[in-house]
Amino acid sequence: MLTYTELQQDLANASVRFNKELTRLSERTATRMKDQAIKNAHVYPKKRTGLLVSSIQGYTVDFGREQTIYVFADTDIAYYAEFVESGTSRMKPRLYIKRAIERIEPSFQKQAEKLLQKALKRRGG
View 1 (cartoon, helix red, strand yellow):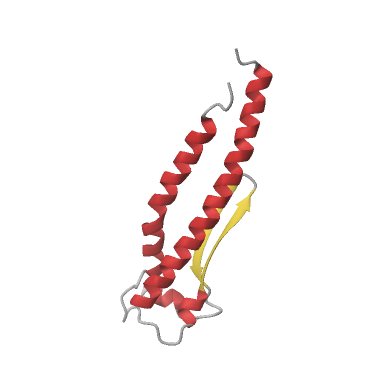
View 2 (spheres, helix red, strand yellow; view 1 turned 180 degrees about the vertical axis):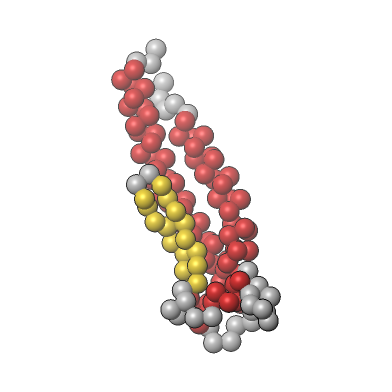
């Protein structure tokens, strides 16, 4: 029979493991999204100077218990990055970042669900 103290300890241990594994998953996902956005930017729009590609960033920020993944093009490096992504009145959007996120996000969600299921399983006897 599981005691209340054992239950609390199991939950605390599972929470620590889950948070560490989720942080690693988030970091890998940010890198994958960034890499996919770079691939997308090589294809359409066609690479010219390389500034757009070099402006693409991907990282995670930890806000206490919340992980946030950021993927964006730094407009300090390529001022036109936002116009390429979103389009203008004379140019249709290229969506190199949005498409990268849409491609990688389902995989992240599945992996995060597996981590949660794993964390909720009781370890030990």
